[in-house]
Image (cartoon, rainbow, N blue to C red; front, side, top):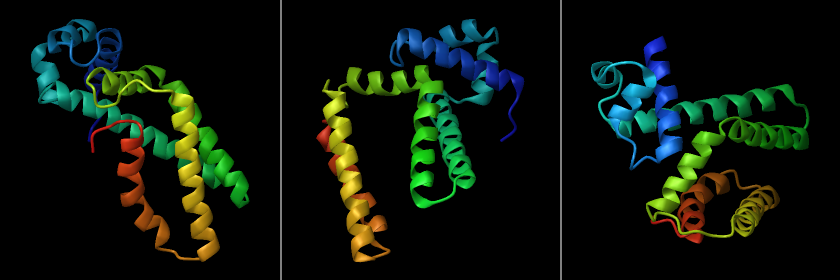
Length: 164
């Protein structure tokens, strides 16, 4: 996809508006005003508000994947690669605080995730992932990780009260 200055300005404005008002209260008109563009320009690049929001998520996911891959490629040794990937992931979230906040707060606001103790949830998630990796390493079953993802994902999402 060709990235234009107008598209980037709209995305930046959308992020600002979503952060200030939340996804549900934000209007395309708010994004138009914040971007200094027209409704036609917004709809030329994005068919609706949801597509605009998903573009922000897609852009973030691409940045996250790139940062993690780069960090891993620059590291030597298994533990260094894991640490580099984790650091890159956390730094990417830290550098995109508004989007991370929007994603999590919107999920809570819309009732997809109930309010919870995020510290405990994080420890539970890390423990589950750690156990899957340890089992995979000790059994030597290359398919365990591929099998674990579809089983683990809904379980982890349910653990935070998300509807699956």
